[in-house]
Image (cartoon, rainbow, N blue to C red):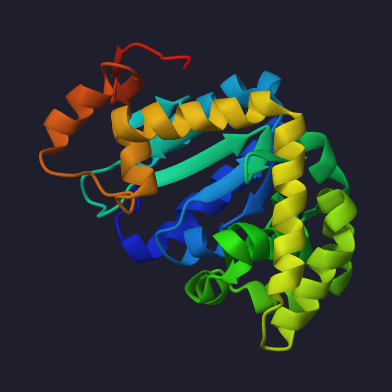
Length: 278
């Protein structure tokens, strides 16, 4: 496979990989961000059983090498997952594939991989993903809200929340089960957002349920607090993901040397650095 150089060709880059990952792992599923990755500079949020992560990482590295997308770096610092990045010099932002086993919201577990399984379909483009309505409901809460039940209008717009909800009402209804006692509230919020408004009381109910669950299971909250206190300050990959727009700051070589102190970094025909299991 020849290299693809243009930023506009990200769909042509990503789709063969997503199809291959679906073939390699029976648990692999994309749950968020697919269109922003294919059409722009977004990442791909996916999930898979941890027993499949090494195989998925291998396929990512083969794909990167085949398309001249190296260097590749592997980050294990975000709780519950592994982040793979490919950072060819010709691209302004690096390509990021996130693979998780679970997702945390407001300090408590929002879902695990097993809970995503009933929401999965095979996309017409040939890879496994959650239903559009389920993606829309997850984005509504994760990207479309702020603390205190307030809306994030930019998140609602840029993540195409209304369009996803409108496209697949049944998928949204099925995904509401993930919110437990707040199922009715999150569906009421979705209906209000589809109508062009916001329901703060409903979002506060969703938030309160998550916080109560976090208080009952403090280990999840503790891991999240550690991540925010240490990884967001000390991990250069996390810093570039969270606040840097997936762009490498300053000197590329100096940045990769820094990354290699705590991550595996792979370049053409060689590798260096140490895998950090943190």
